[in-house]
Length: 136
Image 1 (cartoon, rainbow, N blue to C red):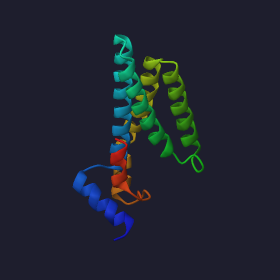
Image 2 (image 1 turned 45 degrees about the vertical axis):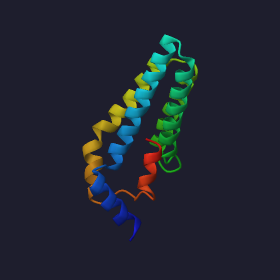
Image 3 (image 1 turned 30 degrees about the vertical axis):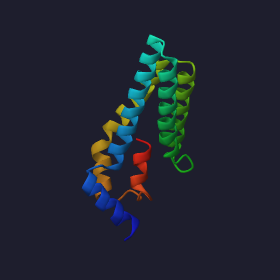
Image 4 (image 1 turned 120 degrees about the horizontal axis):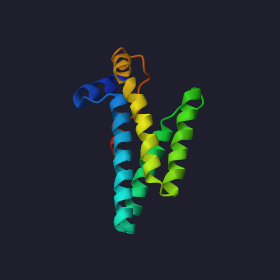
């Protein structure tokens, strides 16, 4: 079975589209930042460190999915993700959440079109769609 057919079958069974997976990663990253912020407020440095590791893992996953060689917009998104990581390093949680929320909102604006293009087979296939479960 070719990769596209496998992806299509898994997509139909799970109901997930590529954009839905991307939005879920952004949601998860925003939630993990909020949890780190909460842990910081109550002085739980162990939990904050755990949440910071989780959010950095998610941000790296988002970053690794960008094709910066082919798309100039991907370079700008990569820069914003790097900026978010810098803000997290400074424990500026509110600003990190703000910029990730803006990025997520941008993707939400194109969600319907992205889903339509995916259904038409206009996106390249994912090599291992089930591998995304390890990140989210």
